[in-house]
Image (cartoon, rainbow, N blue to C red; front, side, top):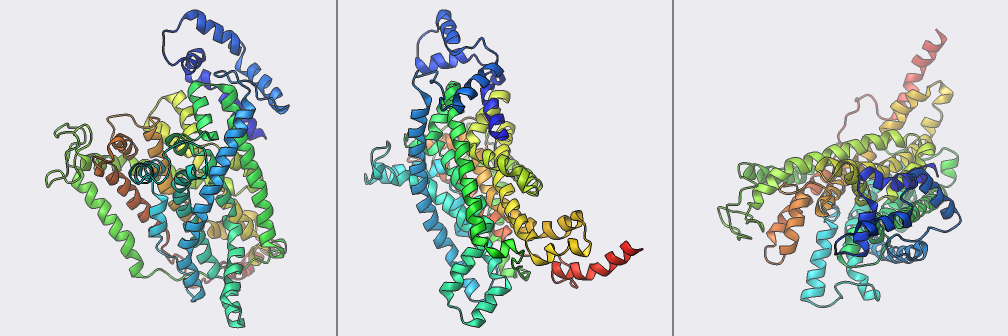
Length: 584
């Protein structure tokens, strides 16, 4: 509740932070054209109570909101809550349809992991297919699906919200990237589950493969349920671009419009509903998670995974190939000028111009190569920052539960609008906005894993043997958490890069003539039919980045000492030394 109130208060002082006259924004939202008369602005200021302090206005709105009255829109003069409930219902319908698509794709992507596990292998798959789906920019996928199925084939309507057929293209646009993300996360967790000793015991005992599969799912889902639920909430909150492309009257589009018009009652009400939705999802997931873990969690008897052997040399083929392609493309484009207007508009590819020219006559290869330095560097910095925050905050699950759920409910675009209002559009501002909201899934994953590691027998008994809390945390809890969370962070690196690209696409990130990949995509989208390479090249670069990150995270390296086979062994072997030291 404290986090929710803090976020709503931050939104209430948004006009003060931006330095913009809220009366001008409201006038332009009501009347898009025409000269603004000073008398009209003064009337709007009196109407919205602009003479009051932000603190007084905030507590007045909060008191009404607690009674179910979110006030009237400053733009339409209509009650806010009924329209927001309708928009939220639309977004939830879209979320459910996207969830169906995501679950189907995730189930298909986990089939190889189940086959390996049932065959006695617990090594991870390369994850190239999941990475490719995860790296698909939603705004690009939405535009391509719209052109192919609505314009060329005329199978589905291009925009609107009037029936189930209007749901197909938006659900595919949101569900395919989400399915790649969920499939890869579930595959990674399943590989750890199949490395636990009970799987071999059940197979020797004659249990059927079907029963082992369902048991593995039950063992795996609690560790990934929290980040998966957060991803579902983020689907609802982050559907701004999809709702904008397909003209869907959802909560994301409504909230974004209110933020742009500085319609504070609508903005505060929309964000409040999203955060309450996140809290409800979080409570439901915790109940389901405890039910799935069952007595093993309550009695501190959760099984421990057997350490995996190092990956073979063949596992290096995929990341090495992808890395070579990225390096070749960057090295080939660095000598080229990304800003020179040396070619004709949308000039087709040739030997001298491998990827053609953009709408301004600039070399696409040069812009992609130079943009890689800023796009990849900024994405890695944000991912590492989120990984550090996620590990630190996730170690305190009871304290961090509220901020995690509330932060995840805020879409990066809304955070981008707030940061832009303070600092102006820039690459640094976009990175700060993405980092502010991207640590929550990693912290949630860390908190879930910490609870499971502490419920393992060798960790539970460590305090009885005299091991201190700090030693337990740094020697036994963190080693069991860092690996999965690091792989999760690698999996989110493409999503972070895409979030930066989306902010650039919406004009909230780097500004022209910068060559960031998101800006290159945004500039090429209107010409995707005439010059597909202008869009396909940066999209392909994002997919290569995703495949590289996910394939590297799938590798196993043996960094342990040879004489240490398991953390539990360390607890036993170190105890005589600890006891002798304490006695001395």
